[in-house]
Structure formats: structure tokens, C-alpha cells
Length: 638
Image (tube, rainbow, N blue to C red):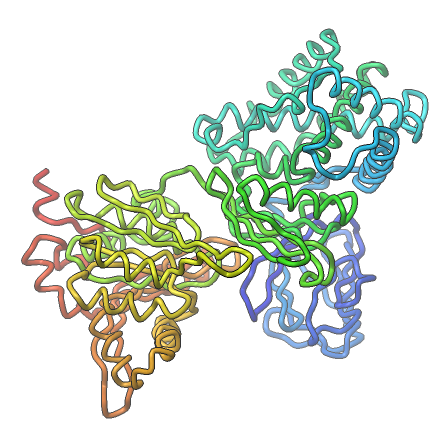
């Protein structure tokens, strides 16, 4: 059973897999679901499944709220699981559509992790391996010897045909499940391009038994025929979830026909892959990197690996075998792109060859042990039509924003972390006329501008002595000498904001950038704060902002994880009498309670530059009045 919950402070959606019919929620680690907040009691709620509903017992002194009604300690409430149950600042709701008694979470996870840890320790001692994969031989003979050693040590720790039969059964099932999901991904033509591929010799099975491999293919195709034919949704993410939910029921039906020797082969096959991933690859992250529907991987500690799917965080259920292995794999990741991390430099930002962004920290900065965040690079090219199709932006707003880009209006995209600012910037850039020259400046290269005349530049950290550092501000200043028609800065986060504003004010209108903020007002205030160090007076800074920025586009991530454009605002003027920047909402969001979605509608205000844009055929005036997507007369003739 999947329980969705979020905090009112950050709006970040989270998901927990609840396996028990009775569980507790609170801030103490002893609870089945631990929510960290000083406002939550150590034991806040106890929830138990009844015949037709859930019974909620209030244990904490702060009480809870259900459908706007407050309940105090000692109360017992009947809850259907769909209405929102709140314990400030968290709200909870079961997701019955995504839930199932047999969700895709691996079973026997603790036992699998423990035997992997024990065999890994044995390998380090017996084969004199160090943590570095560079020192481990990777020729066929050495890999074969390694796999044989894994077999011997696994059996030594109780994994055998006649011993620990249930664990062998579950490992074999997990092996088949991974093959099935891999087949589903590779059959999806769009997703197959995004798979993290490893062609290294070590990733292939050396101790192969041809007859067993033929049998594995037969079992995989049998399961595929039974499960894939029932898939209803065309989106890969939904298809993976449907297979995840149905697989273990099917496995329990088919596995009695599994021969013991074949089951043992599959169990050892899976164990060999996990251990080779640890010794040579990226350990438990290897599989997560291969799944295209996972957009972000967050290692909080060796025992906690979270992932993000569709904007929702969930615990992957995977673990590293030790802090030492976590540190080694972090070193392996950053070392692959020529960076280093150690006690002298315990924090690093890097970009993997496929474009994925990496941030890593090790002790003493990371208190719970080494931590890592990987924001995966998506090879899927988005455009405005796709955003409209996904419901991230309305047709009217899409047409208006594209018109603003063609009309060379400068745009500031505002939103929180992971709301899709970079994706929107990519989509907006598609409307830039092909004859214009663009200089694209980023801290870490993420933008995928599909444009014939674009120069990508990226800032650089200094060496150990601090020499050679190139900042975004340096790159913005240099870009102005490269004859750009437009300058695009991936994100304004420091004093480069002043140079960006000056670029927009000196013949580079139509430039774009992003900023972290929750509202258009906050975005402009934050921009002002970033420029303050320049020494300019506050009113001069506000005048610069008003002259430079035409439109602020606000992006929001909803509680369900969807990312939507929640507002489009025009920057009007600086009111000296009250010392504030005046804004005019052009499109604003309306929450539809029936569908629990945000709908963007015109406010009735027409932007001050609308006449100019209509005259030049960039937009039609009925765009602000009708629900259909407005297009220019020039476009309609084509």
C-alpha cells in the first residue's frame, strides 16, 4: 500500500510503502513511518486496517485534522484513506491506483542485503582486493575466478539448493523480474535511447551455462506474454508500475514449476551481478541509472537511497554495503570525469559524460556518512506541444510565451528546485529565430538548445590553489564581446545577475534566465538581493530590473508531483512613491477541486506590449479571451 504525504513547508511530495495492516506515524525512529519535524510528536498516529476502512488513533498531544475537523489525543476516527489526514505540517493520503498487496518492492530485502555484505567482505579478504576498481583485474579469466569465488562464499553463508530455500526463491524471482523490466524498457523505442549502457567486460556473465540462459529467456518471454498483453497505458512509467504490481503474483503462480538447479543458478546470477556492480561499477545505483523513468537519485546515507519519479520522492529500498563502499563509488563517479573528492576537498560538483549532474559530500561535512545526488540527464527533447499535452502549460499560455520570445521580450523563469525551469527554458528557445546568435552560459551544462547558431559555455572551479576559476559573471561579461543577439544564463544565483540585467538593457533584449523563487514578487526581490553587492542604490537596482525584465513565468510543483506553469506576470514599472516594482498578472492559476489540478486562465489584463506583438503577427489578441491556442496570421497561412 502506497501512502503519499507532503510537508506544507516545502510542498515536496513523498511516498512510503506500507506493508502492515497496522502502523504508526511520528517523529521517533521507532515508527513504521518517521516524519522529521519539531511539530510532530514522537508517536503521533496509529493507523489500523478494519474490514471496510482505516481506524486512526490519535496518540500525540498536537492532535490531527481530517476534512477540516480537529481531533485531540485519544480520539478514534474512521478514515477512508482518500481524504486528506493532516498532522501539522504533514498531510497523508493513500494512493490506491498505484498500490497493491504485492507492489514492485523486492521481498526479503534485508536478507539479500546481508548476504551481499558478507560475500563482499569475504572477497576483499580472500582475493586481496582494495576498494579501487582500477586495481582489480578485468580480463575474462579473472572475472571467471571472481564469479566462482562468489558462488563458493554464497554457499558458505547458507545460500544453497537445500538450505535457505526461501531466499534462493526470492533471489531467483528478482533476477527474472529484472530481466523482464529490462525487456520492457528496451522494447520502448523512446526509452531505449535513454538507458545507461555498460559495455564493459565485467558486466557480462563469465560463468555462463548456455542451457540455463536459454531457459531464462523462455521464462522471460512467458512472463512477458502474460503481463505485457494486459498493459493499458502507453507511458513507460505506468507500464513499469503495472508490471511491478502484477509480477510477484505471477511469480508465485509459476515458480513451483522451477527446477532447483535452475533456481539456484538464477539466485547466484543475481548475486554475481550485484557484487560486480559494487566492485567495478556504481553499486546499487547501477540499476537506478538504467531506468529512464527515474529523474533523480539521492543517497542520504549508505542505508538510505531515495529516487524521484514524476516529481515524487520514494525510498528505493536499496542500500550500500558500507560507508567505505559508498565513498569508493563516489570517488569512482567523480574520478570518471577528472574530479576528485577527499578530506581536503570533501564536496564536489561534476557532470557525467551523458550530461547528468552530480553533487557529492563526504565526512566531515556529511554527518551521517557520504551522500550523493545525481540529477539524470534526459535525452528526451521537449517542446511546447509536449508541455501542453502533459498539462504543464495551457495552449493559450504556450502561444503567448512563444510570441514573447519571437518579439524579443526578456523572460525570467521562476520556480523551486526541480520544478522544470531548465525544461521550460529549452522549450522557449525553440521559438528563437534561426538567424539569431545565442550565447548559453551555465554553471553545469544542462540546456539542450536545438538551434543552428548557439555557443555553449560552462564555468570552471579553481585548482587546489584556487587558480583558474572562471565564474558565470566572467562568462557573461565575455559573452558580450562575442556579438550575441541573445544571452541565456542557466540560473542567476550570484553577482552575475547585475551583468545579466545590463546585457538585457544594452541591446540584448529577448534574453532569458532562471531563478529560485516561489512567486514572481519573490523572484524580483531575490534578483534585487543578488545585485545589492554592486553598490548601486536600491531604486537604481529596481529601475534596472524593470527596464530589463518584461515577463516572469512562475513554475510550481504540485503535491502529486506534476510540474505546471502557475502564472505569467508582466513587469510594469517602478513606483517611486512606494519604492516597489509594479506587476500585472496576465495569466493566473485556478485550482480545480474536482480534478485537483491547476488551470491557467487569462486575468483579463492585456500586456502593455500586446499592440506591438499583434502588429508584428507574433500573437492574436483573442489569445487573451478564448480557450483555443492562438496563432499568428503568418503561421495560419503556413
